[in-house]
Image (cartoon, rainbow, N blue to C red; front, side, top):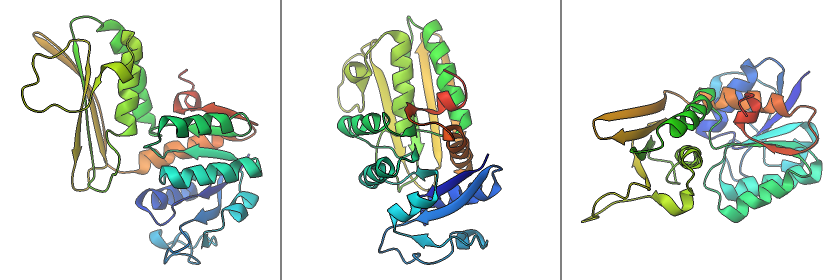
Length: 267
């Protein structure tokens, strides 16, 4: 059963990795590659970045891409993803969304669209990260008293949103396990004389620099001991290969909002 795949943001760092992964994944056929209308890569072969001739020319025609594809994978920016979401609804095709930085009302639009089309929407597509989400769920249930929780994340200098979507999901998983509301207990920055730490808060620390692909650590710190659960990405390929699994998961599904926990059978 082959999934005919379109990839958005084809000239970007993640787009190039997705194209490479699509050419290496059994059951996936790359049929369309999208980029901005003003991109210098329009009209060039999608595999040129990797020295491969795919026969798929990069285009800015979203409707044409959906006419060919079963599913679009999108790791762009919220404004572009929402345009692709509208096109997917019109075409009745699936969508894998790895874009982060959405506002609450934008996430609601994605959930609404999922009543009509199948969508995998996850802050991180890497299989290892989703295993960490599951570990955090268990850890929060066990370490539910006497432990301060801090979430640390580091990414490359080009990332424009903070904290990362993955860090926020980690915070959400832990908060849920502790019976807390992350919106009420999250602390996103500390400066000056802050006073003693509130034991009910979940702290976030963000680092941006160089070419760091993605580091995430959740620390459960008590008096006398520390438990740390981490994931460190050495390249973007884990996100790309996880996205291929998500696209294959959507094949044959008519509608519904899923995340990688569903794709991996962890729910």
